[in-house]
Length: 330
Image (cartoon, rainbow, N blue to C red):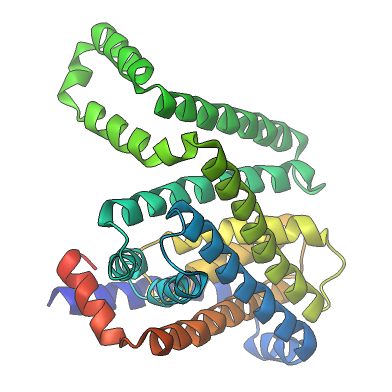
């Protein structure tokens, strides 16, 4: 019953978002625009997104202290992206379980995923703010505010790293806050602080920090490249292509965070449509771009996800079954 309700809710979310994206757009014009896409650049985009999976696998392997082979890291990451197309995103739970099957302690696998999430979230926020500050179509007040928030975000992350290296400082500060506002003691702030600091602790190692930061930048560069090549494929060249790619990928990343949807269908297209409106793109172009970007992305994940399952000798049902036993909410 629970699973049926989840599927129904996911379909409703996708349908509602797609309705608002497509309601003022002639579908025949969108289809005609999509048919004009350059096949070569579509293939190049497929390669870019593939490299996103490869580089994320390299980053993850480093966070695991090279406990698994690069081959296994790539295939497990591919399966993760495939499963994340399902409602409630079972991929991360499955990734931890597949890693433990190769000798990685569960805590190490879980911690590595927490670090990835933090780094990706920080980079997406900074990328979004960078794009908003550089686009001429964005009002100066918004650009200046975006730049300020970006600086504050970097400072906040740096402070968290210092606290992870010296947790006693963080607890001392929290105790001071408790003295000023006693009712806060009723909240589980201490355990939340410990979880955050434990997740960031591996980044206090200079080698791991450099590895994680460098491969995060490389992985996201390929993500931006995947969208930029699709702008070229659709001959959308009368906009700031780099900033449009950065803004589009950043907004799409937030849309994917919506847990109840089918492969983010609807929210993803809405994010690209908003991007198009911000940069001054024609509505038909923006809708076509959203459908093409999403289609190529999901196709890449499906292809390599299936290859990953076959290479590791596991079935989709086995992986989902293990993930469900570990986390009943998946």
